Length: 214
Image (cartoon, rainbow, N blue to C red; front, side, top):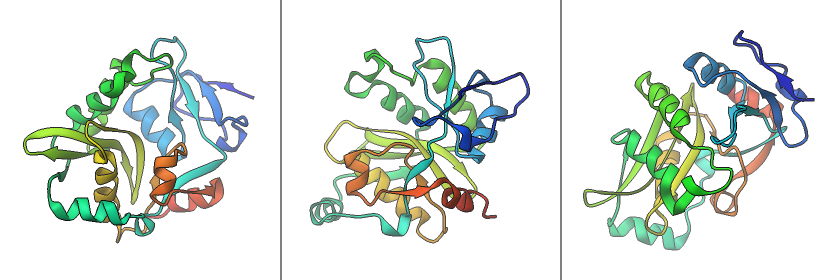
């Protein structure tokens, strides 16, 4: 069953999402809606060319535990060469627009990272709730990732690379920053790229135990 949201900033029980994780339609991309959603592991994900705003909450969650990040031998060699530098929150807008445009994503059918979503996350960044990791080659932004940061946990939204392995460098940098936090990196969706770096599924109940830690 998919629920239609009212004007009140309230979501239905996340465990009632359908088999694909779709929970509800409606709501808005305001700070109130976004903070409430992510506090329960709910995230917006719909084509920006469609009228309906869709909210998802998968029953199983694909996450990376920061201390379990897998760094291959070749990645360790690349990091040691010092060709790239990673930073935190130095160019949030550059990263989110890179995620929107890289590899022609903006023009693809079903593209979800349009101007409304970008504006919403820029606002969240201004409020100190959304964060970015940038990867630089010299003074050129060549990759990165961004997402929501609530409590000890990071909710990854998207990543991009203009050179090989830039998004992996960003993820490794993020995991190292979080290594002592006892939080999780929520990947939202499984990809071979994320699985190769240590991603695995946990139940929604276990996931919420991390979100509820103070």
